Image (cartoon, rainbow, N blue to C red):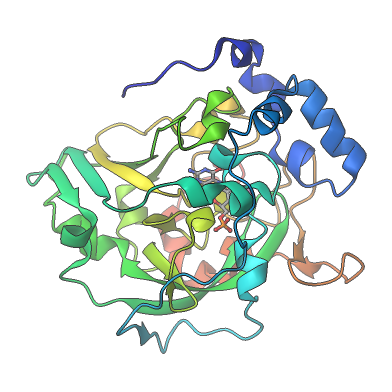
Length: 330
Ligand SMILES: Nc1nc2c(c(=O)[nH]1)N[C@H]1C(S)=C(S)[C@@H](COP(=O)(O)O)O[C@H]1N2
Ligand SMILES: [Mo]
């Protein structure tokens, strides 16, 4: 994997100093936000001053509608969050550290043309255009629960294709025990990558049987529209029974591998962000409880709702983890 150099100024920030998404990003207090800027040396402010961060695009602007999306009859839920809830409060650190930064900054990312490199333990590897990847597959709308490790959640009408249907076309071989997904690396377009917040590019992975599970979705849209950039256009993963950080955005590489991939948040803080990261209300994060969650779009005063085992998908996925110690494999 090629890793481009970070800016020298960013070099002194260790991953261990930024272990928590929540510490930086889930505090509503403006004072906490100022502390972040101080901690990070004000680099983000400097780039703002230099005009290198795109000014606000209309955060709630609708992307084009997708034709011919078939609503899933199986994956329907009530209380779907609004377009605004889903597209203005995001984690996409490549575009900044604040929840509102991706909607403001991701507009500059060029998502057309887009191609995905498929490598590793498969017979049909190579570079494929996004169109080639999508062409054979019907697009389906599935409403899934989404649970961030920071203890917020929402309900989202994704548009996508079962990941398994796409992966099978590459004919993974018997050595393919895991699949790794990598986000675009481009500090010119992604100002957040100029800082060593994570070891860029963002990498995530699944065991092959998890990746082949029918719930795992390759997503291209939301609410019947093509994905807005801040949600990981033009192609992202959604693994609804796992914490949100597994659902990697803006994928440019898929690699089949015999060994468990090294994943970004696990590398940054392995005691806090496991490889499996299944939603589990019984296993607290070292620094906060995971028993309940705050539903985005509701008042901060609204009572938190109970977090469900495997985010409500236990009947479908718990058999994947039979015999594993779910506390250990948090
Ligand atoms: N490349 C990349 N993918 C990412 C992230 C990120 O910072 N970079 N954040 C993750 C986290 S922590 C969450 S909660 C979800 C948020 O997805 P959403 O903004 O569409 O809700 O994206 C995940 N995928
Ligand atoms: Mo998250």
